[in-house]
Image (cartoon, rainbow, N blue to C red):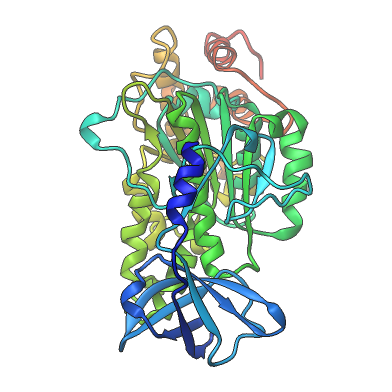
Length: 441
């Protein structure tokens, strides 16, 4: 009844519409009752041959509404009617969405039939919970990846970024996390993903068991900027729905950079001034609004553990989006091309990666082992060039000798196959066995 009541309230007693005045690229200008429109309002353009194209109001100029489409603009001409269909974006997720694949509009795209709407309207651009009412992060969670469980332990409600250049293996790491992380529900957003990889991800990476406890939101790279941007909002909205039910939600998004690129397209189309690398000011205001929605909920709610990939442009980890995201999240996982090139996957640079809940989230019995292993890795990294060139003489420095001794076994420990899972306690025990000399090279 509540869902029906909400839907009845959205029904208008009259039809209000404007007309398309100009079309420039992906930007439409709509003239007419502009006072009845607001930023974020949805219009429906009636094109030729019965086509209907949904658009969103993204700004105003000279008493005209500036709109961007959710679909192709073929068939739109001057004078087409632009009917106001809603004043803001809402969606009705439900428990029956589990195991389904939806697009940025919340419509099923997996060929399993239409989705029945849920009982509660969720705003796509909802505000994060108030900071003073949020709970603290929870207990450490099992990610199933040795390198992360031991050296970058993550807690329930924490938000981590996975920073990597193209082709370094972040999507494979994300698929391992989707399959092995201990959670009640996983919500996975594929924002601007390659079309051919979607089915591979669903069938090979997630598999039937992974899909059964997941909701996957897909917007491929060929879709309009608004669809790619909304896929990110939809991902967090669905995660919030399950969080409000008291569930521990894993939210995975690939990638935040493509969300930022989509927002840049929207901003440039509406006349925003470009700043560093062409990114508009709204990109850097929308990023925290999006990412802050993940995290612990209020009392009585669950939590959203967020893992977001960031595609660093040209392997520059200080480029604008990476720098902004790193300052918002609770830790960052850095993947490096040089590590991938020597065949160690996942190509995580432990020394450059940080979890802001360490060291209090580490099992106290193994904290000393983790700290010692980090020191050994750091010592070897400092002397690596000299060791490879043969310029270091064994026996010159006991600490370097120890680092050289343990390097092969630590390197093997950090390597993990795509279909291999190591639970948190197992990872600690394996690391302790290595440093206690119980594992040979």
